Image 1 (cartoon, rainbow, N blue to C red):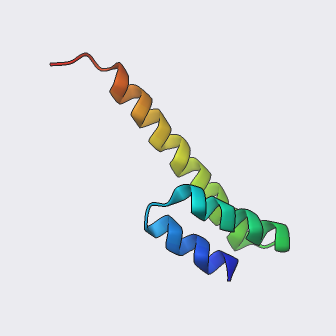
Image 2: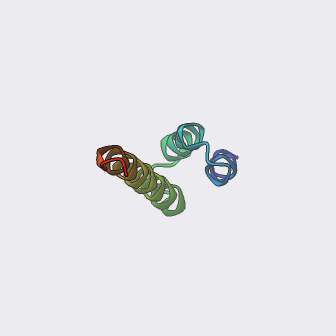
Length: 62
């Protein structure tokens, strides 16, 4: 249930909500490789989005 909900929220771009459900899935079964992988992938995507946002803010205006 948690993993399915997490994937749906991730697909909708609701990363914070998706992370909540991935955290629940990992808490429920800390050895679930799919939940761990998907959570890690989401965290990487969040970090990349933040890095792009920071870089975009530093670009000089044209």
